[in-house]
Image (cartoon, rainbow, N blue to C red; front, side, top):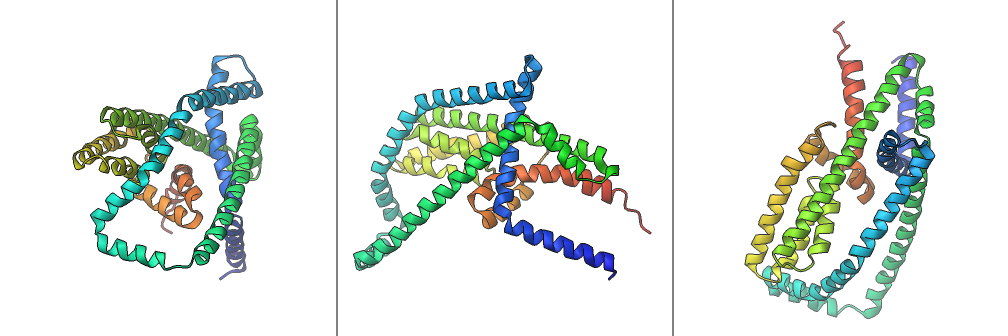
Length: 334
């Protein structure tokens, strides 16, 4: 091994170790990039329609989003709170129904063993668990605030950040890097816009379908299904569990109706909405998307699971443009 190869290998290993130690910082930064692109898409569109500079256009977009969120909250939050309270009342009946389906003998044995545990032994881990949850919630809140702040700064002046990244590349590759950044931005922006429209459609159709079937908790079930649309493959399947569990309390026939509704909506979203809305962006293979979600979910938990798909969108563009075109296509047998 030559000295140059050895130095490059050591540098790559050192960078990998540093990246692993700073994985949560990098996750917050990438989340800010995703949010910044989400803000940049309507800001750029508004600037094309109206003679506004970027700070004014960004301010209009942020105020419009806050106003829209306030109006939607005024409309939906009271109903969501009522349905959450209804869910709390239905949980004992749901647990009893699940226990009866799973078999009472094992469940009763577990309940009997739980009754023999000392109260202090149960309260002590519960208290530490609550403290851990409170600390995790505070840490998550700080990370979200930092992510929003970074996203606003990036959306306020994206060209300066692009020039900084371009300046850090070799001179001969700077024009290529500029085009690569633009392609990544277009792919990520197209993916975000398409998935947002798809999630809204799934939310409305699920809410309407469950309401027509007279299934309780239709609104909160629709919200869960819509939000989990951003986690393809895993999300829609997990989201179906809530309306199925509620339908189980009514009758087996209602459960079958809800299952048919969710299967129809999942196929509509997977084979019609998503291909139609994402036809101008990258085409993600289901196997690649699923492996990315499982890998980042195992390493980084829920935040990694949520950001897995945007990261794959960017990496796929980089792989196609750099690895395939700049390396593999120019590789000739010596």
